[in-house]
Amino acid sequence: MDKRLNMLAKRRHLLLTQAAIQRELLMDELAPWQARLAMAEKGLSAVRYVKSHPTLLIGGLALFGLLRPGASLLGRGRAAKWLHTGLATVKIARKLYSMLPKKPLPPQVVK
Image 1 (spheres, rainbow, N blue to C red):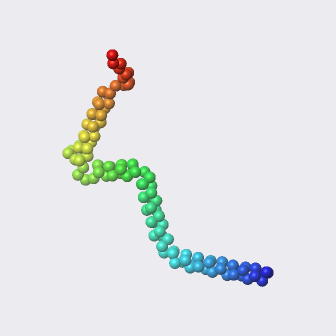
Image 2: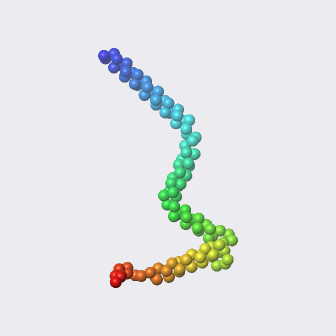
Image 3: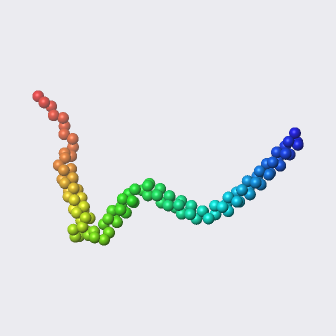
């Protein structure tokens, strides 16, 4: 029994040594890829952040649309038209909301 345990211990030691050597060789082979993979990981984390905060993306695109060349807030640019339409819509919605009854009407009894 001791002979078998001794043989298993030697085999285990040999396998652990081989695994350590293989890990070292693999690290040497993958070293040039480390910087590229780190950059890819940063890109993926940025995508995950934007995916979890979509308002930032929408706000950034809206800001880009307003500040791009040719878009004028005061002139006849596309942003001015959208702003005018949005303000008109808000005014109409407020007026309609103010016309709604403040309290629910009591049920009417028909005689």
